[in-house]
Length: 159
Image (cartoon, rainbow, N blue to C red; front, top):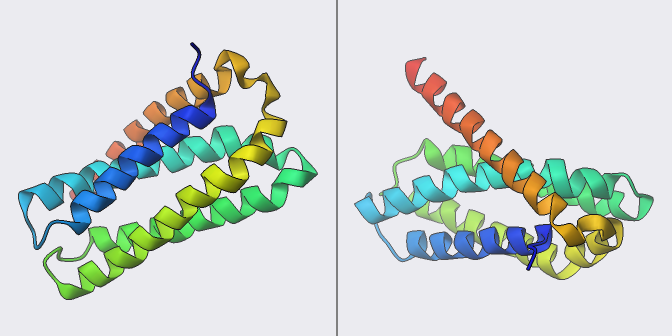
């Protein structure tokens, strides 16, 4: 059976929810928290870029999808800003945990909103995804974006 872009995104969301829970269930600068944060940070960044270029780009082509697409892309930016802030903070500080709780709440809301509201509208636009074409594009874009995120991280270390 062919996987649609909606199933593919939901699979990522499920993984992101698990990582958020793992991070929330750990404390301090533990190895488990560090690994879960790194996995979350890199996967969400590449996921969001792929989602914007495959799902939201198509939604923007239709007047009925433009407001939702703009709203979701705006939420991506807000969460990206918080993630960058968190990435530069000490994980064992109370400030980190407070900021993380904001990110967790916001991202869980965002994922729920996508799955409950946006996917139904997007299915009207992406009717040709029955063959998994957009899921494949999403995967390809996510992999390419992951390489860009890794390169950006390497460049930041050398500066």
